[in-house]
Amino acid sequence: MYIVYNVKHYFNLMENTSHSVNQNVAVIGAGVIGIATAIQLQQCGYQVTLLDKQGISEGCSKGNAGHFATEQVFPLAQASLLPQLPKMLLDPKGALRISPSYLFKALPWFMRFLANMRPRIFKQNKEALKKLNCAAINAWQRLTQASSSEGLFHLNGSLLTFESNSQKNALATLEHYKNEGVNVTLLERNELDELQPGLHQNITHALYFTDVGHTCSPYQLNLALFEHAKSLGVSFKQAEVTSLFTTDSAVTINTNHDDLVFDALVMCTGAHSKSLCKQLGYNVPLDTERGYHYMVGSENMPTMPVVSFEKKFILTPMQEGLRLAGTVEFAGLSKAPTYRRADMLKQLGESIWPNLVDDYPEQDKKWMGFRPTLPDSLPVIGRAPKHNNVFFNFGHQHLGLTLAAICAELIACDVQGVKPLIDLTPYSIARFN
Image (cartoon, rainbow, N blue to C red; front, side, top):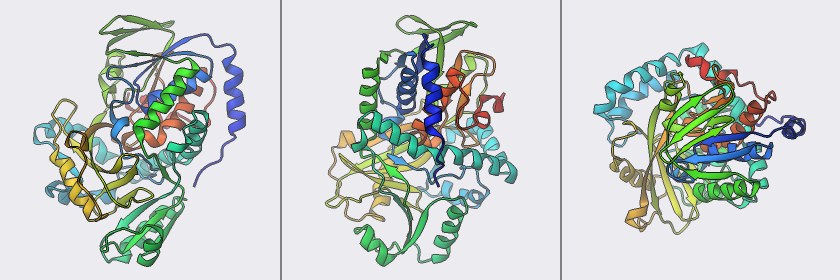
């Protein structure tokens, strides 16, 4: 499914532009997207300062499922989801929960979400998402090779399992993906036993996505990328950005420590982007999907991510154990974690991988992170329409890790004024303003 671009020509353009660059650029947000963006800009000749309140990779980039999910070319806002919503919301172990106290605040987002299910809009969003996903793995290969972190990047594929005995669902889903050019194979139970022994006997079929990958430690991968960024000359300041002020020639970033002035700014602030955008005069319908993980041990580990079609969660082999991840909770940024959402992942995990050992240290086994999500499932990438020195790279929903490398390459082009390999128009913040 991957598109092979004229990468040599692309990097020649970037390299030729970099010789005349002598600007200081701030990248706000030190998650995987911010770090990858800082690397690309520094390589292009800019002097980059990375800013983050918490530190390096302390947000959603730290505890995610580690899945480079390039097969997920379908926007979340799809009409087939509507009949499933009541069951998902009523099931205590369902993949979706909306906090009652947050329901009224979330309604405008959900109205936009429903509007994006219209066939024409859905198709447009799908094509835009597919373009990014098709280029994502190649971009990650370039980034991990440059940062000598190939050992944390595994292209073993992934499985989507079906626990019912209905081959009809599996075949329909297979065709769904094949029609979009995704490389996928339907495996029967005997083939599963050979490829991935250890799966629960209730699993009757699985789709095998051959071109996707995972990292055995998102956190260690981000730290490796940051070390590479530092070796290139990227500097880091741990500070909370409180306000922004822009002129045609400079961007002033006020922090809780001091005021910093830069030639340009790239906002890679994930779920915390909405308020900063508003300061600059942009309204963005960004909300937060709170996701959880639960860490366990296992005597025999799977070799690839395994996703449950029915239960909508994922388990991924990590250096430190087996990570069970997933669920969507709408409750905002300030509410305390609902860790029973993490607890239920263990029960779900046993239905896919029965050989689990719940022996992980209590203080380390549960985690919650904030996914930045937009109602059309597309990120915001590109130059701010009303500012010549402000750029955006946020809102990647469930695909932040997947799209970090390609979006970093694209935004680096845009900052330089070089035409990116992928047209950024569908991802512009102008679609909301």
